[in-house]
Image (cartoon, rainbow, N blue to C red; front, side, top):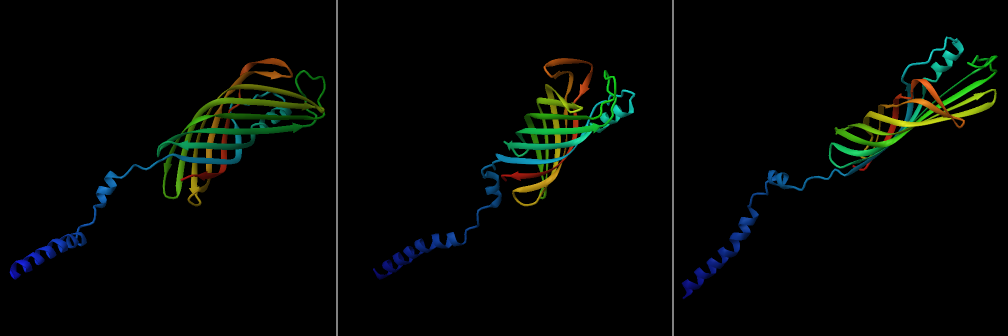
Length: 238
């Protein structure tokens, strides 16, 4: 009887101790298994960027044969730009966004001989501006310290031309369809912000102008396209 009791006690001890020993010496879960079956990451990320820089007017410069007028036209080719992006990424490599950019240039001169004017004007000022706004398809390629973002899109392009002759101002405007494309290289300052350089262009053209209530037709198509170099600051949600 004592022998049976001793064996029963030993068996009970073995049954109790064995699971504890097995649990303590069990191999850890394979990391490869966890990586293989883990839940895919989410890429629903936001990014906004804004900045400014230089704008170069594309297209042919009108040559009148008058050095004074031709010089004014050349000055209008160089201006400034303001650019802003708001983007939402559905996947790691692509998303959708909105882009807005503004380009402006101005020129002025004294004693300028203008067509259809009997005598030179004492003062002449002209300011041209192009405002683009539209949706875009966005791609991104990310590195540890750098981010590349590209975009293409279509949208309205608003053109205005204000001319002041001897203190009297006339205003012209026209709206057309514009095409925009850009490539931005960004350096990550920290986990949420960055600085970079964006090269982009907006293409559009017009063949008429609404000037002081009149629709003025042009014999040649006028380019209102710009090539832009923008220094920007960005903010990211990831």
